[in-house]
Amino acid sequence: MTDAQNLNELLVNASRTARNSLDDNREVALKNFDEAAQKSQDVAKLLGVPVMDAYKAHLDLNSINIKIGGLTLHDGDMPLRQLGLGSRRMLLCGIQKKGLEEGHITLFDEVEFGLEPHRIARLIKHVREDITGQYFLTTHSPIVLRELTIKELHIVHNKDGVVQIIAASDKNLEEHEVQGKIRSSAEAFLAKKVVVCEGATEVGFLRGFDDYQLSEGKDPLSYHGVALLDAKGGGKVKNLAKAFNSLGYDVAVLADADADDQFSQADIDELAKLGIQVQVWTEKLALEQRAMLDLPWANVLISVKLAHDELNQSVCDQVSSRLGEVLDENIVNWVDSPKLRIAIGDVAKKKDWFKNITKGDLWFNAITPAFEDAEFLKKDLVVKLDRLWAWVEHA
Image (cartoon, rainbow, N blue to C red; front, side):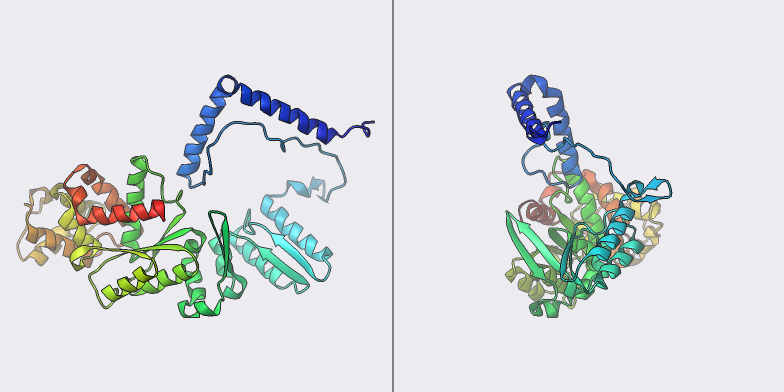
């Protein structure tokens, strides 16, 4: 009965009129909605969702939908549209494969969406076995990456509208052994920027630093697209940093400087020539040693008490043995001295007081009050952390 008039065109025109009317009265009509939109923007940044301009309330011209009933597949009396999202996607892929002709090209966006790991593996095997055409899959899942070979994987970067696509199997990348790094570090391949950390302590410490920066009003690491990668030893830092750099990622390094046979000045210079920012502690120290020298004494004792109370370390005996003196079992009675600070740092490193991500995170959160001390802010520990954060925000 309405063939003479295009309903979609009529609805679009009506929507445009409504949008213009709301824009003219935004300060009155949409004030509360815009305030809610601002809160949503804050949440988006907190969760690492990019905000291109600013959130505001408005009508969506594409939100009008007219449904027309029709025949659909059922499982008994249940329409298959009521299946879970992952199940529907799996089913659709299978149905489409049955009906595809030779020479097809199929696009599959976010292949992992709604699927458990075992079904992801099954789906990838399913499309890999289809020799009648070619599939283009996109993913943000480390599980998917681990299922792929480097011959199947291309990394896509979009920087300021310039798109770069790098084949992981490129001959020039063979020296970096990309396949093994995808298996061991898949999560980092899904970030925009990668901080290669010497070990789990550094990863946990930076996670704590991230929480501190957030409390100071800064946007978190996730908002800047930063992944913290545990290199699992200084000897692996350089090769990991070079591999990610060669694949187009922005890369920085946070490492100890206490073992030249693991990570040397020559390694630092080599990475710097590639544009990779490297932060190591002065005086050839590990993180624990540098921290115990730089922290206010009260926070050194907090660190020791954390290792004793929460991490079940026999700190008094350990430090006394390293110092060559018997210390008071009541840690609060320990008296500040350079010799004692060195002993505490050496023991914290050797006995692995904070040698995993959780412990490193707990440690940083325990010493956060130190950042209220003006003198501490001038120390090497804070200077290097601040340089790294500047890279996070501006790389």
